[in-house]
Image 1 (cartoon, rainbow, N blue to C red):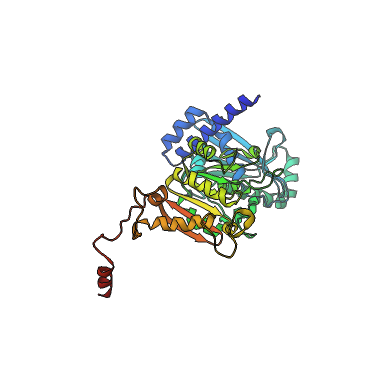
Image 2: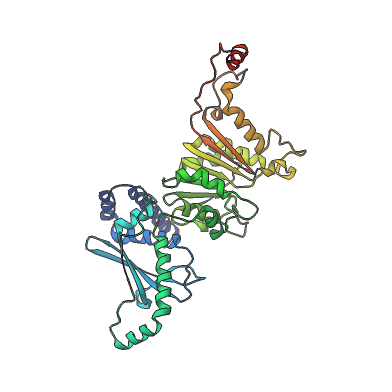
Length: 401
């Protein structure tokens, strides 16, 4: 398959994923219509890949093969997954599998579990069986001899698969450690703040852009992209890096190559892949770059979205364009944050600027600052100020009462 054919396949798979994300929050009829149009085999491939990604690390030390059956109408699609500690969960060929446990979902049910609301049921929507009865009596004696060990391992492996068949996920700190992101328990303690501010987006089909994929020129990185993919079960995640990290591209993750200090490129990126609900700047942390990215991308964030800037400490680092002396200057990232607080209150200025409000004056509705981290809310900054006739003397008199 040449690159053009591969791109066509990727485009078709991405289109199917987007349809599944939409259908997951819809009716059974909508999911059934999608299955009829795309076919069970194509849908099953996407669902199994998503399950593989969501499965935590297996706990069982004895290798176990678990069959995942998907049914629709009179059709059945089976994928056999091999699980063992310290190895990634993978699909194995039927002729090499030795199935010890089997889980069966309707395809409609699994679509809803993966891409529907995260309060999907934990039981009552699947069937399961353990340790199929051997046809040969000799195999039965072998099975009985190993039953205690294998049954425990099968239960552990089945639990791993069930954890992959849900929209629920561990907290963001645990995901950060799982996927190798540095946003928790390292130099940063960001995930608790992210969890608080991102909670309302969890069940939405959000588009997330993270500037800075991590790693170095010869290291792919990408831990945060995988963390966001798991945290947002219906989300599409885009990563931007100066170095080529496109090898990280997979279903629901797209790695892009570009310069965060190039307004023309950023505008084209947002037009093609946005509008973004959430933008996270974890890029170069050079103050000029931070300001360029914000000024270019914030106007293109979807209303109701958030723009996040990490590692604000570089506002005090001279080699990043920061200020010395303990006060961040106006050209730094923290200088930008201070400007935004002023813009949020622009109607309160006693000498308001002449002309129409700026983009940030019109659309910044909240600024939440933490240690080295800020969240900027996008919306309509429409709250009015006091009437012009209510001068300081009137205000003081009212306050005295």
